[in-house]
Length: 228
Image (cartoon, rainbow, N blue to C red):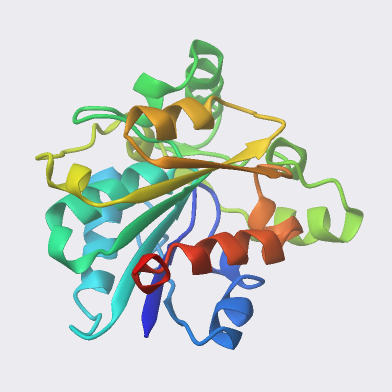
């Protein structure tokens, strides 16, 4: 049996995978969906530790596929680097990724960095970045946009500034990098730079909400047994 560890991106929560989980279960998969929103003041390393804790619950006879959406691309790679023997495949879904020392802010264009810092400065003590509107994630359906607005949470600024800690162990794990078209950021190049197999899907950044079926098919093909 394959266990899919599904890690949500910035401003989102475990609910972001609600339309993917039933499809994976129907194909015989098991899912773990860690919640990164357990502390308001946290950084990327805290999020990676939460994913490591989820990996540590996977049984030895299960095939783990570690999936990270958007910001969580950095998170899952750090977690996999800490537990390389516990991960059979990594999938990035429009995921940020880079070498040791990379962070969201080192990979993102200056306009993104400036906007996030300015938004954080407008909210409380400046440690949280308020959620952008649903349209930023490509969600234009009225019902979906309303539901998303109600569920998005502020994101700790430190998750964007902390650099990843990678020993190189993660580079021995095969990976797939899904990039959504039209591109919002160079997610195709991020995946290529870390040596992952590229796969394009037509859809918005939050494709797991709008087009779960084609994404689920890619995740199922990432199972180690699918390549053996």
